[in-house]
Image (cartoon, rainbow, N blue to C red; front, side):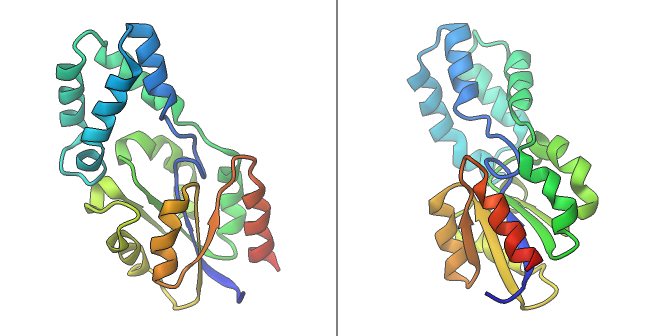
Length: 194
């Protein structure tokens, strides 16, 4: 593979932890609500939330209506506390010396800004589904990221979900699955530095 000019990273599962399913398990246990009920709610509201059809405030309003016994502030704080940096985040300053770094995530900016802020100066672009109206694996979100590239060089996209890699491959990007052990980090460094 030729030199990578653009490195596109997912957020949850790649540079930060994912709040699901831990949040739902915690709320189920703490408030004695069937886990399946919480998951059904998540599935129903997921697309609207991730595509920005509803904002974060509306999400919490619907959440509270569906689960009135759950303390909303507790749930909000728990969600944010579960989104923590993963080891790859420490590599971004070095990687940014070799390639343009782009973040691409199905998420809400309100929930990941504390992850992005410390590395903001090393990031070329940030594309969050809740802001642009498309979710991976829809091709539109990959094209949105691609529209920000300075050159037509090689692109490497890293995601922790196989289903999200196909859309990137369909527009000519190289892809890498982020494994839970973090072996993918070595592969990215090898491709960037050699």
